[in-house]
Image (tube, rainbow, N blue to C red; front, side):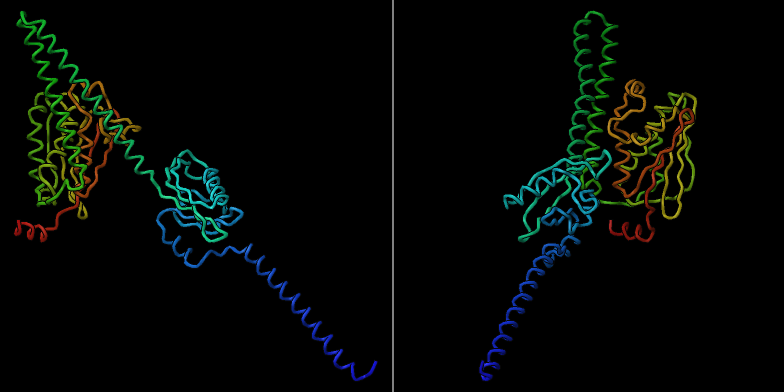
Length: 384
């Protein structure tokens, strides 16, 4: 071969070789990039920040259903465990969205976490997030379901509680008609009729009062309230019943305590506590009503020497219509709403109520309220 052709041939071969090597390297780089995209756990820009800010549950899943990002709410609800969805129902929704590409919205009743009996109600929406990811958003509806159950129970309880006195009034009215020629029987039935009608009126009034207390505007205006006066009025309201059972009502403690609130409601709450103590105390016993001021808190304690409350019932005594001794309550006309009213009155005043009891040794119910600031009280009085 002529030496004049060697140089151009060598150059051409070098260019071809270089182009081939470059093409191979470029192809390998593209394959590596695609592989990196497949195994990458990075989510689109901004999604991390959105999930971190969510109060509800949010989860992002990759094509293998691995959880690549979960909000704090998703962890709190127990939806994610070891980088995977816990509930098969959620996995089924994700798979369906991945197949169809269409968003799905459903309400689900799920267990809370991988173990345990607690349940949770979720409003779930699942949709695609870009080409690779699936996003699952879940809003907790457990509280609304719980409130609905409480409402149903309340209506059922009202129906049951009202049915007894209404039925009694109806039967007694029929008995009066049948005994119209017997004056003594008429008097006896009339007394019982009066008692049942009073019980019916009392239950109705307490239901109305409880409903008002549960309203958001139950305490629209707060005045400066003298606790000594509240105690005196509540004791006076119960004096006749206590004397009829030979029960001694004794008050004492720190004088001059004041709180902001509604005096009528506070009297009602304390009246209910004293009436409850009388109802469950033996004749000839003593009930103490004490007031104390400690670290900005006013405490009003009602202590009796009654039958006491079993330990397993202490957490239930403030439930609507709950009675520790149903037979005794019905005989004395108790509705089971008194302590529930007390709880709501105290809560509306920014306080709480506590109970200590020991069967056979009596009980102590303690109302705790924020103490009124005297300077603020003077200002309030000036603008009243």
